[in-house]
Image (cartoon, rainbow, N blue to C red):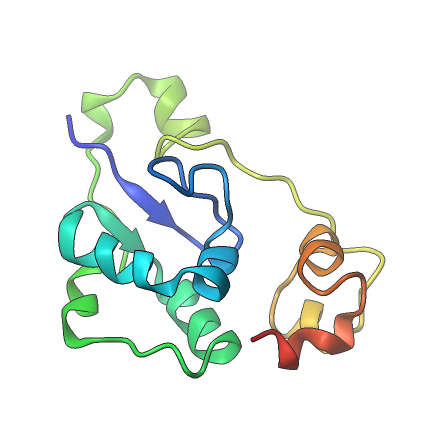
Length: 135
């Protein structure tokens, strides 16, 4: 059984390696060379299309090389190889996150960029207008 290291947004955390438990956006900000290392050395390192768009918007200076293409999309997992509970609740080996969208409802960062209240509090220090200046 292959483990996938799947990032469905920039807030997904690393479940492996020296940056375990840190969110993708933090590594892009502090150690972007580690992302290149992952792409070159981990076949099952996968980011969603949405994550790629978030990276482009938040980190415009981050160069996305050609070999990134094979790491973009959805991991192919056949549920018959997993028990039903894992398939439903923990499909990619990580817990589903429940985000709230109440405090910053109506802001561009939340309505258009789809950042949750927790994301805005964590990344933008509670200022939804700071989304454009993250790098």
